Length: 244
Ligand SMILES: Nc1ncnc2c1ncn2[C@@H]1O[C@H](COP(=O)(O)OP(=O)(O)OP(=O)(O)O)[C@@H](O)[C@H]1O
Ligand SMILES: [Mg+2]
Image (cartoon, rainbow, N blue to C red; front, side, top):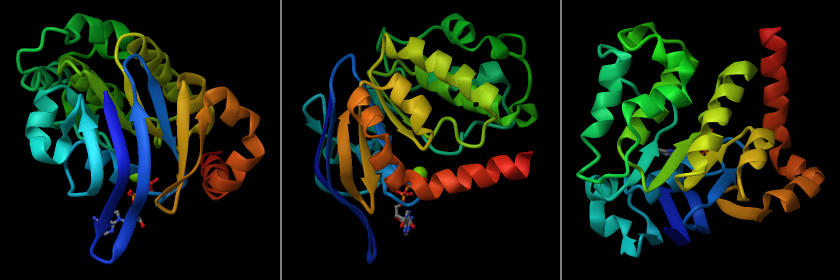
């Protein structure tokens, strides 16, 4: 479905991604893990054609930079960016309807009712304004809108970021069901949750893949994984402390 080879992304003098190779096959859920600043978002932005890149990104055999961001989305490469960008002046249901515009005639989209079944919390608030939603509800709407757009591959950038543990669980419960039907490339800092969901994962650090393998292999190597992710685990601990 998606083949990333020797990907390089630079912002002026900053080399954010330095030769990353990664693939997602049909039916697969692949994790992209790593600490802050590792290059995860830059990899996803390149993969959906939002930034120019060196190396190659092929979606169903076609080079994404040649397709361009709009055609890539219309071909079913659907990206839910970091930070849940929903429309505050539209209702929950209207936000989902926006997703239908990217469906581009593909028949395999999720229906609105399927989205509400995946995220029962949204079902009772179809008419609520986007501005009045909690962070978790916004994330659910952002994912729901992507599903309505009939993804052939869904790319998610840190869907659990900043959410309370119970909401993270609800989001991952939905992702597990989504993954039965749609291939997923998942960027996450929540390694424990991500490895429960993913078949395979790669760990980025400093713009390079420093570790990769099946979820079981990576779980077995948790000491090494922790050494790469240690810094942000400290941040997590601090965040928990501040919340308490
Ligand atoms: N628009 C930009 N201009 C300049 N530098 C950037 C830009 N976006 C990202 N960077 C830099 O590129 C590097 C990789 O950033 P990126 O956002 O891809 O990391 P990330 O793994 O997604 O991090 P996080 O976990 O914090 O979201 C960082 O050093 C970052 O400061
Ligand atoms: Mg990021």
